[in-house]
Image 1 (cartoon, helix red, strand yellow):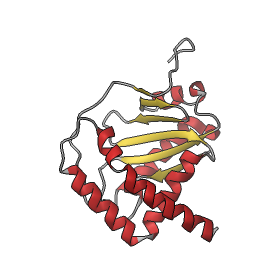
Image 2 (cartoon, helix red, strand yellow):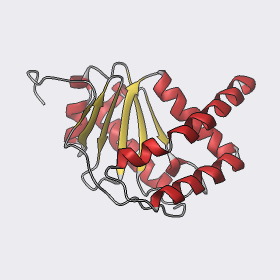
Image 3 (tube, one colour):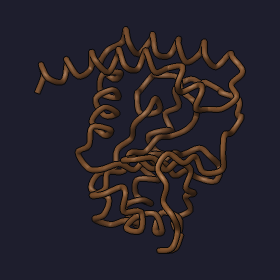
Length: 185
């Protein structure tokens, strides 16, 4: 990326991808994999990475998931790609998604997704509270796992279609998670 590159919101770099969705039982190595990448990201970004968290299903002990570790990186301004994208590219990640307030990079093996958003943003909050809720609430955790297993049986034109199919459940569970967070904190 150079300073002359045009940055357009809502871009899926590389286009749509057809991939088989595989849900596997929880793997105790996922937190280890997260820590390895968190250290790699911290080395690459230093203080530009305000916070690095393990999110997504692989961050919830006991929850079956796609074997893709999701990492949340909070930065001062995700629109200022020149502050963080070049070091992450040098660290071995590839740009995949560019949308307002959120970027997603991934490993070439596609087994780690790096989600970059603004520190303290609603995007970060929703993902963290959803994670924490699933860690706490066995009913929603089981229901989410069953939904994912059911959806994985279908053919999907794109991984984003699979993710979209989970939206209603995620929104409902996130509402419960936010109510819990407000009552707890």
